[in-house]
Image (cartoon, rainbow, N blue to C red; front, side, top):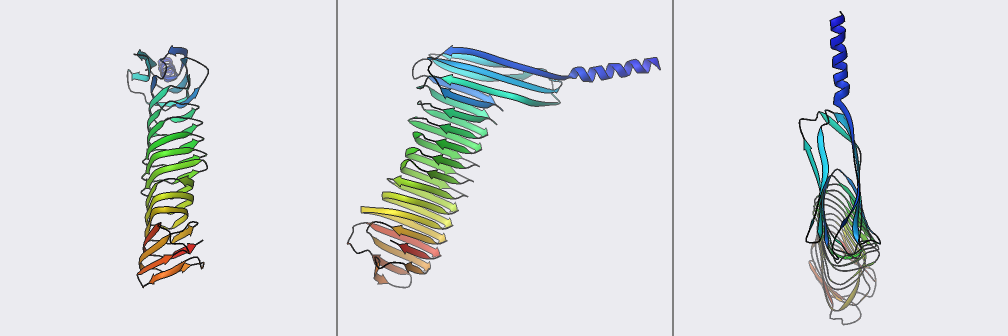
Length: 338
């Protein structure tokens, strides 16, 4: 009986020993050249990057995990190569970990304002504030918030996560496989935005020369000037207060709501295969409508018919403007408003 009790005590102690809690703390500064690039690779972290009154990179890492059979060699490998700084998470396990739980994993970085960022993460959340260098980010699963940045270029690819951009002046090149884009009070120019499954909302600021495409989602752009290419395969499109010389808006299954200030020599095309088109035209234009089965509702004497055939109609405003709006609609109605 005494032997059995001893064995039981040994087993219980062994289980307690195998359940472990470990911490990793790093707080240090590293040199980087002016206009240099910071490369960062992490997994499962909350990453906060902001500019500060500094000429070095200030790095703080706090990581605490608990688990059973936790025997992991965790550290950060840091290297300065020709003035650029490379920071990479390194994790190596000596044997199988039955389970672990991350209690805290935070990476806080303060950089000079002109530093470029190249970030790669797997299940990381990012907050980036006050950066004027270019930003390149590739993430698999996590949300990204970017604010008060004057980056010349932002190149962002997220597999599964939302992107929030606030008060940024930049050119965007974005691909979201499964996530939403919300942009507020930004000045976006020469930007390409693609989502496969998610909504796009851009409001406030000044937006010009934007190409937007989503396979499954709605698109909303409030205020913009320049050329626009906007396509949704399955979703509604709302474009409000748009000043443009060239515009293409297309949806296969959804409605289009467009408030357009047309310009002389402007060329505009709006199409919907299965949905309504509501056009508020503040300028002057010739309007050509080709339809399969649509009702045309011109709600003002501003629009007069030149041609009024069943599937082909031409309307003009009171002025002989050189601008032309071409509307192609399959199964839906068209409303024209001044």
